[in-house]
Every structure is written in structure tokens, then in C-alpha cells.
Length: 320
Ligand SMILES: Nc1nc2c(c(=O)[nH]1)N[C@H]1C(S)=C(S)[C@@H](COP(=O)(O)O)O[C@H]1N2
Ligand SMILES: [Mo]
Image (cartoon, rainbow, N blue to C red; front, side, top):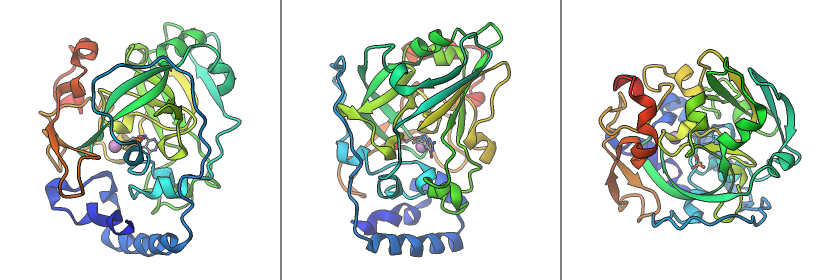
């Protein structure tokens, strides 16, 4: 099993999965030996406690990715850049108590406990496609509620043109934040942002669960965004701060590589990443590393009807 860990570094250029390319070869060797050592420790498996949730079911016909794949093939650089690092390293991540600081252009700001936020709305299931900018995809049954319902409670003012989000910054718990190499060169905390219109779109989900249970640590426990029409990096994990701003906020991947990752990052098969095509995607969970099925990538990841109206003013290039 452990052998597949580095397969994505040795795939042909057009299949190379991406964000990790910021590590150079020497760094890879260093992290490889660190990881090999880690692999020899007894595997804690998936020990984090998840509890069952009550929610309104989604009757979508999409073929859901096996849970075991969705919870072991992750991008959560705070816990390492390898796809199975988060599942290995995040198991002791402490997610209770958890609160979110709300600030900026809104009438009702302050610190809100997640358990109180959860009383505001019934939970609903949403089976959504997830398309990573690295050209792979999954279908995940999330549980949460529309971000719009949460935002209404904070009463943003007319100056709130954007919403900025931040992931927890806790180097004690997140090894990728202690070690630049392990954290993929990102300046933490991980930050993301949306226009207020995007944040209020009915598809935008604030998720606390998946596969009928609370989110496991590696998938962004206890609370994350899910934006099914955007590349996966916009769906920020383990959120501790929401800020209403008048200016477009900085976003982690755009800061790291502005020529490769934009603010909008809407899924678009016609605009290639500078280093690979976005025309199609590998479907995770369909066969082994080499037998995976592919599908043609859809504009807005198949959600054009619900979101295209927000982007009539944007040129094609700016989508990226
Ligand atoms: N804080 C934080 N959020 C993050 C990431 C990350 O590294 N750190 N990775 C992003 C990327 S690139 C993707 S594809 C999705 C992956 O979500 P999943 O692991 O639940 O499939 O999370 C996104 N959210
Ligand atoms: Mo991603």
C-alpha cells in the first residue's frame, strides 16, 4: 500500500498531479525518507471519532466515490503534501471545542461556537462533484447547510463585497505549518475568498459531515466550504475565521503561483493549466493507479445552470 505514495511524482508530465511540484527533487528525497520512517510506525488507521448525523437525504443519481478513497486520497497540506499524509497525520487533530470568528463589514460580528451555529439550520445532504485542479475528481455526499443561511445571521452591510476565510493556524497540531517543506511552501494560515454573490449562491455549502457522519480530520473537520463548480483548492478546510471585506481578499494558491491559480478558479475544460490540460479528469476510485477511468471535464464542473450567471462580465482567462 505504502508504495503508491510517490507514484504521482513519477507519472508522465501530462498526468503529474500538481500542487506538489513546488517541492524540488532534493526536498522530495528528504521528505521521502521522513515519510518512510513514519510508515514504519504502527498505523493508527482511522482512529478519529466520527459521530452519525441526522440530515435530509439527497436522492442524486451520481455515482458516489467509495468512502475509503475519499478519506485517504486528500489534499490538506497542513498535514503534508502526499495524498495519504492527511489520513496518516491528522488523526489526533482536536476539533472540539471549535469556534469561528466573524469580523469585518457586518452588523453581527464576534466569536460563534460551532455547536451554536449548528442549531441555526437543519442539516442536508448534498451529493456534489469535486474537481481538483490536478485533474482528478470524486463525487462526495456532503452534509451541511447553505453558507447563505449562515451569512444572513451576520447581517453583512453593503460594504461587504467579498468574504475571506481562514483555516486554523496551529503549528503544534499541523506538522505542515511547522515545516515549510512538509507544508509545500505555503505561508500559513491557508486563506480563501469568494465574492459575496458566490458566497450567497444556493450551491455554496458549509459542510460538517460526509458519508452520513461528521467530517474526518483529513477532509477538513469540523467545518469547511464546498464549492462544487470551482477547483478543489477553493473549498477551504477547518475554518476558524470569516471576514466581510470591501476588497478582493488574498488567496493561498494565487499568492503562491499567481500565473497558475486565479481568484475565481471556476472549473473550465477550455482553459488549460500552464502545465497540463484541464479537458478531462481521472475518476478516483475507478480501478488502480493505471486503470482509472477518465471523463471529460464539464464547464463549471456541470453546475453552469446554477452559477454561470455570476460570471457574464468575466473574460475566459480570468476564470482561472
Ligand atoms: N486548509 C486547507 N484547505 C484545503 C486544502 C489544503 O491544503 N488546506 N486543499 C484543497 C484542495 S487542493 C482540495 S482538492 C480539497 C480536497 O478536499 P478533500 O481532501 O476533502 O477531497 O481541499 C482543499 N482545501
Ligand atoms: Mo486540489
